[in-house]
Amino acid sequence: MSEPLRLLMIEDSATDAGLITRQLVKGGYLPQLLRVETQEEFSAALTENPWQIILCDYNLPAFSAPQALTLLRGSGRDIPCIVVSGFVGEETAVSLMKGGAVDFVLKDNLSRLVPAVQREIREAEVRRQNRRNGERLRLLDEISLALSRNFRDYREGVELAARHSAETIGDLCLISLLSEDGQWLDPVALYHPDPTVRQELRDCLTAHPFPVNRGSCGQVATTGQQLLITDFSPEEARHAMNPDQLPQLDRLGIGSLLIVPLSTHGQIIGTFWLAGIIPGKTINPDDFPFVQELANRVAISVDNANLYTDLQRSNLNLKVAYDTTLEGWSRALDLRDRETEGHSRRVTSLTDLLARQAGMTETEVLQAHRGALLHDIGKMGVPDAILHKSGTLTEEEWRIMRRHPGHALDLLWPIEYLRPALDIPYCHHERWDGSGYPRGLKGEEIPVAARLFAIVDNWDALRSDRPYRQKWGEEQILEYLRAKSGILFDPQAVELFIRFIGNRTNVD
Image (cartoon, rainbow, N blue to C red; front, side, top):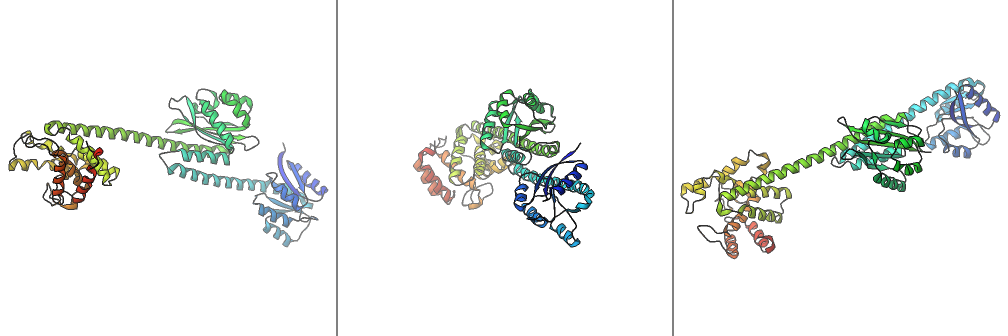
C-alpha cells in the first residue's frame, strides 16, 4: 500500500516533474504534489500545508535553489529540502549543503532519490519528536511550578494545565473531580480557545454533569482505564456522553477523544478529558504518556490541597477543643475562688481589646488571650485556707501565695501549645520598679502582655467588692493608676489604658 507524501516541488519542467513523481511512486509513495516555479508561489505554498519534503531544481528561469533555501530558513519551518538537478560543480553542491539543503540528487541518477527522501523524513520526524518532547517537558515544569506555587489552592495550576493541553495537543480540555457522593464528575477547569464556546460548555456541563455510572466517559472514573477514540463518530458519542450534552458537543465537531483517570494513592478522584476538534488537532496514542503524566501531577496537586484543607479543619477543631478546655479551666478557677467569679472572663475580654490598641499582632493577641484566661492557674497550688482567708495574710502565708506564678510555670511549661501564653501567668505580678515577684523584673524586662494585663487585673479587682474592702469608683481607680505609673505600672501602658477606657463602649 502506497504511503501518502506531502510534497512541495520547485521545478519548471513538467517532464522532469513527471519523472521525479514516477520514481517516488515506484518507491512506494503516493505524492500529494504542489509544483511551483517562482518565489511568490513558493512563499505562499510554505504556509498552505505541513509539507514533509521539498524537492528543488537548482536553477529556474525566475527562481533558484539558493533563494528557496534562504526563504525556507527565514520561515523557521523544519522541512527537509533536497536539491534535484542536473550536473553542478562540487563547490556549488557544498554551498547548497551549507545553505540548508539536506542532500543533492542528480536527475540522471534518480535511484538515490527515494532512499534520501525516506532518510530525511525519518530524521525530520525525530527532530519533530525531540522538539515536541522538549516543549512538553517545559510545559510540565511550568505547570508543576503553578501547581506547587499555591499548594492550598490547586485551581490556578489546574486551569493552566487545561489551557496548555488544549493549545498543544488537543483543542478542548476538561478536568473534572468526583463529587462528594461519588456519583458525578464536576468540572473544575475547562479550556477552549473561543471564550463564547468555553462559557457555553461550562454552562452545559454545570447543568448536565457526567454521571459516573453511565457512558464510557463516566466509566473511566469507575474502572480507572483510559479511553482513546481516534475517530469519534456520532454512534460513539451516544455511548460516551450524557444525552443532555450531545447537542452542544455535536456542534463542536469532536473528531478524537482521550480521557485518563486522575488518581492518587490508588484512589480515583476525577478525569482528565482532551478532545480534538475537526478540522483541528487529532489525539493519537503517542499523546498518552504526556497526558497521563500531566494528569498524575494534577491529581497530586488536588490531593495535596485536600490534605491541607483537612489539616486546617483538624487544626481548627483541635484549637476549638484546646480553647474550650482553657475556658473550662478558667471557670473552674473562678468557681474555686468565689470572690473573683467572672473575673477571668472580664479581664480576658479587656486584655484582648487593649492588646490590639497597643498594636500587638493577632498571634500575640491570641497568646495574651490564653494567658489572661489562665493568669491565676498557679493558685491551684495555694491551699484553700490561704486562698479563702478573709483576714490579712501572715508573712508565711504571703510567701506561699507569691509562689503561684512559679506553679503556673510548672503547670504550663510542659504543654508546648501553651508556652507562648506564659508571659501573663508567670509575669503579671512583676512591677515596673522591680519590686514585684517572682523574679523582680524591672521596666521593659517585663513582657509587654504582662505589663498590659497588670493594669487590667488591678482595674477589674478594684471595681469589685471584697470582704476586706468595698469596690472603688472609676475615677478613684484611674487616679490610683496615675499615681502608680512608673512605680507599679508601665507609664506608656497606663496612658494607653486611660485613653482607651474613656471610650465607654469598650468596657463592661
